Amino acid sequence: MAHGDFYFTINATFYHFTRNWGEQALVDYWQALGREYLQPLARRFEAGGLAEIARYWAEYYAAEPGGTVLVSRIDPGTVLVDVHVCPAIRWLRQSPDAAVHPPVHPMYCQHCLYINRAMLANTRYRFDLEGGDGRCLQTFTGPTAPEARP
Amino acid sequence: MIGVNDFIPAYDWTFEYLRRNRGEAAVEAFWAESIAFDSQQHANVLIQAKGLQGMAEYWGHTLDSEAADYCTQLAPDYFRIDMYACPSKGALIRIGQQEYHDYCQHCMGWIRPIMDRAGFLIDHEHNHASQCWWEMYRHGGRHPVVVPPLRMDRDVRLRPGWRQAVHHLWLASALIESMPGHLP
Image 1 (cartoon, helix red, strand yellow):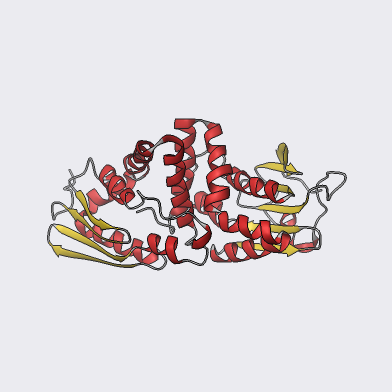
Image 2: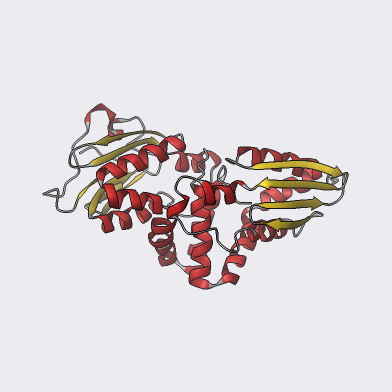
């Protein structure tokens, strides 16, 4: 199940937070998503290491409609997610119904940064983001070996 | 990123986040304001402009895209949806997630404001087990307000599994009652 129009819902949700409660409320929501909702994924990354992080994001972006994203291990300690065409930004700007919707939320690209950093806060991995507006580089860095099991 | 492929569980979680931090009224306002007239603005535009025909165009396209198991009927005086397997609720049931206490409520939460604005009323019932039916019709178009008759063999109320769980029933856009599944 994947319908690109859900990107409109995501964008509308971001507007709802900032319009009603301000920018910090939106950041709080993103950080709660990472800290709470996505903790099972954080544990999965911790258990599987960078190999699992690379595999997850390659499959994730492959399932999103209309993006062009390359995921690679540029060195043993780094996974690079090279977003040539962000599927969300593309949909929000170019899909058939884009014209009747508000523009991309000005903070839209920051959700990747805040969510991933909050998700990884208690792991051995770090997330960084360069760029935005539909084209960015996302890096996950950390130890090469998965977490040792006791 | 928040993607569309695994969006539904995050959507359900967001309803509960809003309820927990801002209260139940904030969840309803989210649906009535930002989902109805921002997220679903393309539906609103179609329905305001074309009425019943616009509903047929919107739901035909959207439910096909979501790979739903459903049937629609465009009659002269109403538009009907029979949902045999809602992809959203079905996904939550499959993964065993129920963050918000009533995920099904969100559809009425955004559709009713659009119908109110366009001058339509809604009869609707869902069973919280990924099945529901909807009939939209012009304001004042039905007297008395009663549960619509069965709509031949495609009516979801004849499907296996319909009579389970707790049902919520709306007639003329008003919540009537919560009750076990029933036939008219």
